[in-house]
Image (tube, rainbow, N blue to C red; front, side, top):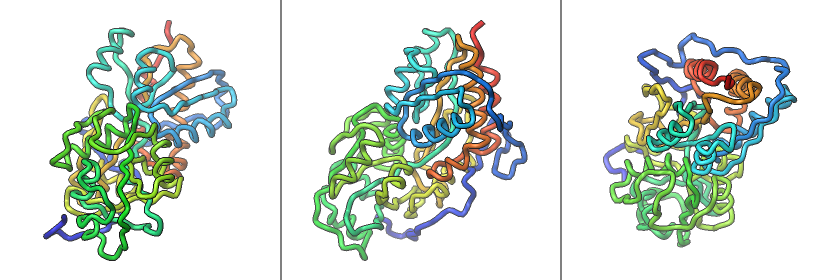
Length: 364
């Protein structure tokens, strides 16, 4: 429990664009470098693109691709929310035009790609988001979970909502003597990677490791963020981890949780954006922050990446990918804000666009 530390429910007041450092360059929200402007009118391109992968950003990707298609009817983009594990596998096998993952490519996955294609993979962040403890306790819309509470739930050590550890943290809440049903991912998942990276740092008794797939000591599995959201909604006493947008869009309550500073933080895009302040984005964009030090940060948040090929046989596909990524950063931030995602800083967006323009080419 939080003992000698002040317990605070904080709503961050910073802008959604987080401040980070990239290659020693200040790219805080006050920087004045602008993002390249995508075509405001129909690009005139004719292309059909298929992608698959992470469910974490799926609501935003599907919204982006629908809006882009309305402005560019010649470009059709389909995206299958199959989980990061399946998305990376399809990307490595070359059965999609792009993959998507919430976990950076591993060294083994990079080596596999280079062995197949003779070049390094292209991994670019598109947005950021947070992972929340979504729960189903009728009549209880506000709940606080200190670390020993949520660690105990995940480890299977706390099995009832009336457990003294949870009750002590919520003295004004009439907690029911309902069994806790822990709901986790059954598929290979970048959300699981992000979540277990935090659990591995925050929970001393956690033995499951940090990966897209782990051995859970308790609970039942569901496929995709969609599956966990549905299972929690249908299970009184259920609790599981989902991307913030899924809880928000489905009207599921999400617990405030304790961060590394001992503060209880309500989940919000603003509080999650503070995870990345002062962090360094490496050359391959593979930034992870398992347990942020910022005392006002919601503690479970991360980037999500698209996986592109260096060469495309169809030049229209290469050009369409360049165009839709520029469009997403120029016109798509409003949809990210609406859905509860965290837009990247303009300087990072510019760096991503430049990477795509320089490295994604048509096969000659």
